[in-house]
Image (cartoon, one colour):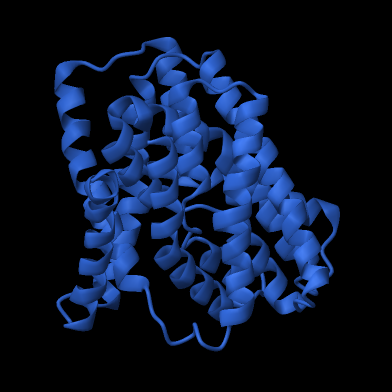
Length: 306
């Protein structure tokens, strides 16, 4: 029942999003507008609200952040080895690397809310506030390295900073942390406003994920996409488990961390891949395969640690 209760609502809404797209109740214009609303307004507002009313970062949260950073950096190195080991071309390399460690924030927030409640969501929000900037630096650096473009150090720094500064999720997380330190609670009228916004954010995000899934590129890139998914959904949870034990994570941090490691890869890999000359068709295939198979990785985490 733990899997049914916590994962079924998430995958049901993703499946509904795919169905609505198939029967033409939604379309490209709707999905683009929905993505912009979620990415630029509703989700950053929800992160600001959840983190802004959470307790200050303590030893327990710090252990989760430390374990996650170490796990992501380790898996990044594993992905670099895979590029050589499996002969992945430079055109695919940037997208492949991202598919190994980037995570779907929306799915993560929905699953953790179901499984661990408001406290788990607040802890997850603090984690992603630290981990998203690191992941963006790794992604941009790898994409530039394999892009075939001659880019000097100043230009690399400019592109990386632009990716960080313009990310609304990072802004929402950092603003929430600052608010939590300075004030720590919201007036009732603001709390109720953010609560209504949060009710919109997750369903709309999950419907959009389903609407963007397509199987047409999966057969062409299946083998290499499967390698990336194995690294993301098998190696990352194993490495993450090791570091959570090393850092002595508390029960809450351990559960949040293991669900974080088991998440599917992020649809955002397509955006950076298209901007920096990497294979967006591979990125699309990796997203579909990772989303489908993440049901099993998250189910395993819930059964073993839920």
